[in-house]
Image (cartoon, rainbow, N blue to C red; front, side):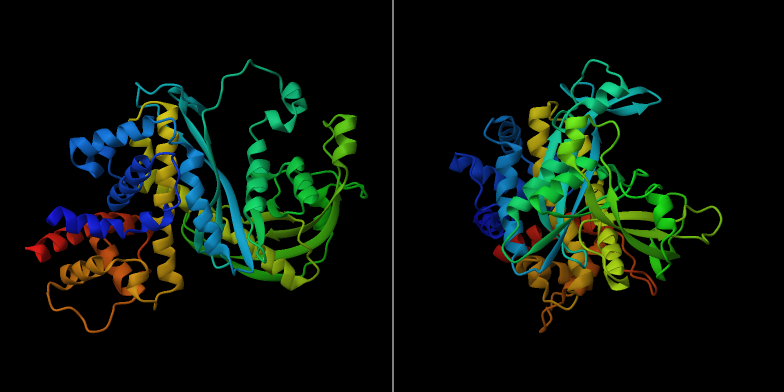
Length: 467
C-alpha cells in the first residue's frame, strides 16, 4: 500500500510531464528513464546507487544506459519540445551557447575518453559538452535547444597553417554553427531568438551562417578584425567613435575578486568585416563581407587588483541609438546564466563522479543530468522572478506540506498557500541558507542540498500519512 502511494506521487512528478513524449522504441524503457529521472532529481549529486537505493533498480539503471536505443538525441528531444512550448508567446528569447568539459582522469577504468587539455599531471581525459540554453530576457532558463557531447578524437599532428586551412566542418568550432542551425529550426512562430556567444564563438563562418539563414546573433569579439572600408582595425575604429554614455554593471564575485559595481563607457558603430586573410580565395569570395554593428563597453577607471570590464559586442541586430546599445548589453549580461547552469550539472549533479566507464554510457547519463540540472536552476531563478506565485508551481502538495511541518516543527498547516519565495527559502534553510538580515536569496548550492533533504522528508510524510 505504501509503495503504491509513493508511486502515485512520483508519477505526478515533473519528469513525467517533461519527458512524457519520450520515444525509446520500448514502453518499458520510456518508463524506466522517467522513473530514474525522478530518482536522480530527488537526490541531486547522489550516485546512481544512492539514488536508486535497491540493487534491482540500480541494475536496471546501468542496463538502461547500456541500451543502444538510449541516446542523447532520444533523451533530449522531449525536453526540447517542452522547451519550445514554454517559448511560445515570448516575443524574444536569448539563446546562450557555451562549452564545458568533464574530467574523468581519476577514474582509471574509464575507456574511450578524449583529451580535454593539459595539467601538471599530464593530459586530462574526459568529455566535451556544448549546449544552447534558452532564456527569457530577464534570465529565466526555459530549457535546452541544443546539446552535443563528444570525446575529442586523436588526430595526427598538423601545423597551425594546415589547421587554419581545414574546412569549418572538420573543426571543433563547427559546434557553434550546428547549435545555431538547431536553434533556428526549433524557433516557434512569432518568437525572435538571439543567439549569444562569448569570445570563443568569434568565428567568421558563424557570422556568415547567421547572415545566410537570417539568424540573429550577438558575439563578444576576440579578434581585432580587419575592416573592409577602413585603414584601421576593429578596436582602433571603435575607439574613434563618440562616447554615448556611461552605465553601471554588476560584476559578480570571482575567485580572487569581490562582487562590485563597474562604471563603463559605451560606444557603438557599424562596421564591414573582411574575411580572414588565411581564407583561400574561393572561400573568401563565397564568405564575402559581413556588415555588423559593434557595441564597445569599457571600464576606464577600474580599482587596483581587479580585471577591468571590456566587451566588444558584435551583432547583426541593428544598433541605431543609445537605447539599442543598452539593450544589446543586457542580452550579453544574460549569457552568464549558462555558466551557472554548467556549474549546476558539474557540481550539483556530480557527473564527474559517475562510474559508467564508457563514453557511450556516460553521454546519455550526462544528457539526463543536464535536464535535471535545468530544473534545479529554474527553481532558483523562478524564486527571484515570480516570488509571490503559489508554491504549487514548483512543489507537489505532499512536498510543501512536509516542508512546512519540518521548518515550523508544527503539524498545523497554514490556511493560506505558501508562496514560491517562502518555500524556496525553507528549502535553502535545509541546505544551509541562514536567511540573516541582509542575506540575499538562497543560491543554487543551498537549493540542491536542501532539495535532497526535502525529498527524504516528503517521502516520510507520505509513509506516515498512509499508516
